[in-house]
Length: 270
Image 1: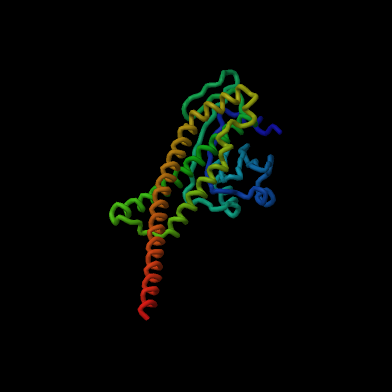
Image 2 (image 1 turned 30 degrees about the horizontal axis):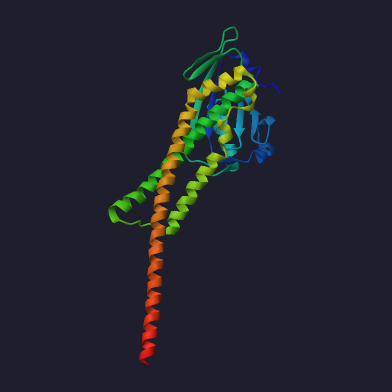
């Protein structure tokens, strides 16, 4: 279904993306929303608003507003809140502008592109790149916070020569880290070339230009590096805990042997 014909009649298309949370129940939202649904799939849903604007909501927690006024954005976010799993207090945002020049070839510049037309396929490529960008900002913040907590453990080790936090606290921290990493792994498909761009040279180039513009691959590599640092440090701390427990176990065995020896010795005396 072609839904962006009227956008191509404009001089520009303004995109504004927001990362709202970890997951959005789009199935329930589809039934109760006050906006007109124009497209729906297992992973995303699209609405039409007044004045020719559109809202593209992704199940993984992001929304892309297209030519929407600020009050429309704020109203929609309020409506969506009850359907968000783990809503974020701090919203991570990104924006982009496409100028429409029908009689001219495509031009790709920083912060805006000039295209001859904006159709449904073009929009999907732009929206997916914006969703990637906001998700990377969000998970970069999550990992930075985890590294900050990890640094506190390192300070304890440097100052006290031991870890103040117990094994249970450390295991909880590891679980939190794994949840964050798994959440990113579940969204890896967003970092691949959209299916619609595989067999279309123009869309493929648009996707590559957007990837470069938002520096998605570089930012993702930075995120991977941070997780590796996190994993390496956690491995060291768990080794310390395991050695500590091993030492305790050795002392328990020694004490049990001594008790047995003393018991045997006392038995002979009696």
